[in-house]
Image 1: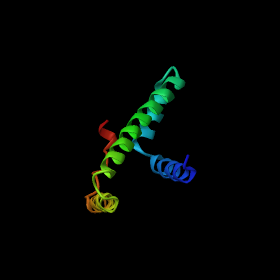
Image 2 (image 1 turned 90 degrees about the horizontal axis):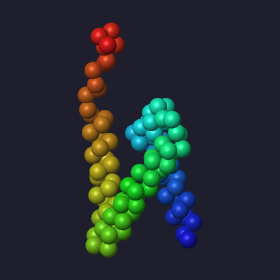
Image 3 (image 1 turned 45 degrees about the vertical axis):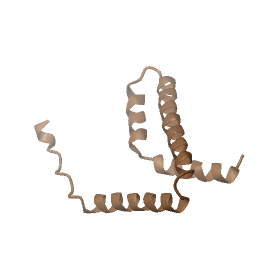
Image 4 (image 1 turned 45 degrees about the horizontal axis):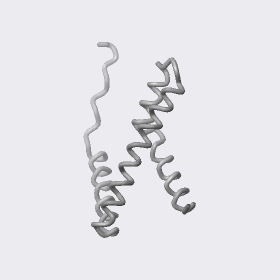
Length: 99
């Protein structure tokens, strides 16, 4: 096993998932569940499946498209999303009195 790739993958995914929507959903599901073990297993299985498909797609794509091009496209997508979120107008404040 390539332990350096394992450690890098774990660290990047762990840090990027902190406070992510999937973690917030897991917290919400855990607050209402009779079995937190079932919620953990369900959330973990969902994350494993999506990660599996992502790795499968990435390895298939790498056999067709040059690695530098994949990195460039990913960088442009992240930059576009970052700029979009920065220049997006802020959401209107929620009026709690009407609830």
